[in-house]
Image (cartoon, rainbow, N blue to C red; front, top):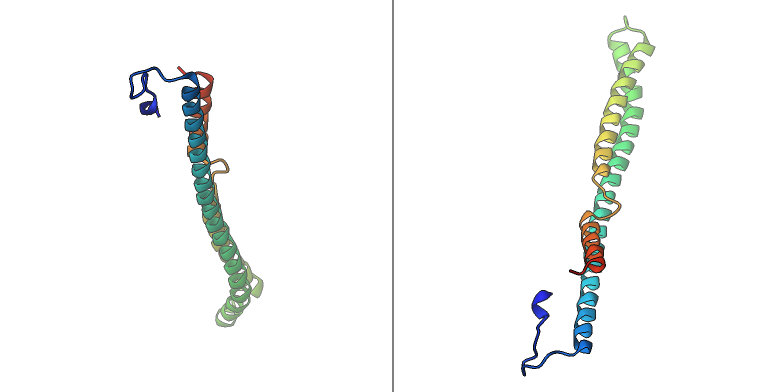
Length: 139
């Protein structure tokens, strides 16, 4: 931006105040357009992260529910048949705990992915702060 500011025109005369203000306004418009493009790009990236985290959590939850239902009925009955010394409710308790731990692990993975999502894009926030400071103190 600074390379566009000159103290003289090609003919050697001083630029007018109007041309200087016009140049500043043009540069400011271009800066705002670039900031909006950056913000759009960052919001899209954050949205993609959100979709990935939500998808992982949804699939993990659905798989845990299906596995818990099927194995929760099959395995305790099978083990009760194979080892009748343990009561049937004991086998159901063991497998309920195992499937609960597996589901909690998948939900924790999805939650950690969701923690990487930023509501306010960090690069855009930083450059906007810099722009506001520059506008307030144009030294």
